[in-house]
Amino acid sequence: MPDNAFSPDKKVRVLAIANQKGGVGKTTTAINLGTALAAIGERVLLIDLDPQGNASTGLGVPKKQRENSLYDVIVDRRPIGDTAVSTAVPGLWLLPSDPDLSGVEIELGQAERRSYRLRDALDGLDQNKPPYDYILIDCPPSLNLLTVNSMSAADAVLVPLQCEFFALEGLSQLMRTIDLVRGSLNPKLSLQGIVLTMFDKRNALSGHVERDVRSHFGQLVYDTVIPRNVRVSEAPSFGKPALIYDMKCSGSQAYIKLAKELVTRERTRRKQAAKIPA
Image (cartoon, rainbow, N blue to C red; front, side):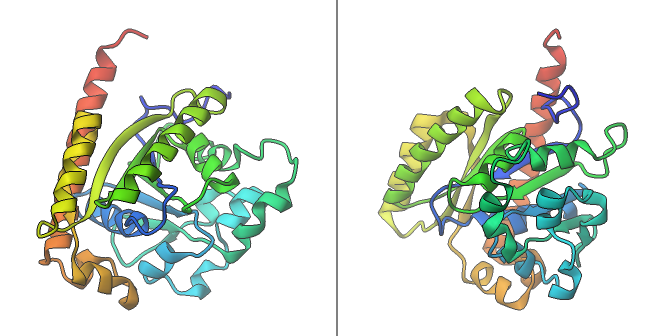
């Protein structure tokens, strides 16, 4: 492992937003958490690692601004600084996706450091004066080379978890994946936290899932819960984060609260890390 790899004690924090189950609010969380962090003054880079490019579309970045994409970074080793684009949200940048990413596994074959391409690119950023405070990686809903790259590059994994029964099975699969990556590729990888999404207080199952998850994972589960909200669901079709589409809706307010909680937890983590002797 290179000495200059991103690590939890550096100011920039790299979070892979991942869940191997689809439809859990992963991209929605990536877009709106990134927007909310930018709104409270953090500098954020959102990396769209899903070949479908939903995060790029949801942020309203037109295709003409995606001429250089994450594909160029991973396959051709183009610097991130030449590829990231600004968004309509001040303080939020996007490293756009490309449908060609779906063929990366075949294209790279047995290429050197194929599992570390994204981490190598992040290591290419200015370590003394990082341009971002947070880097959020929106992962595809499957375990493939792209997901492995994200977890090799990340400090920790943030897991959006839909409040439904089958989501719990997906969570157990993801925990096994994190353990595998920690054991073979990135020993510093940790579980940053679990965010409960699509919570419906009228549905008894939502409450049951919440109790089960909190009972098992304790403080790793965020206090903030993201409710099921029509305005949040509508926003991507207008190419806007929910916080811009309708800042006053319950979903937008929940993501602002989540961003504040994340920053508070990160400050606590850094203080604790500073007390631990090297």
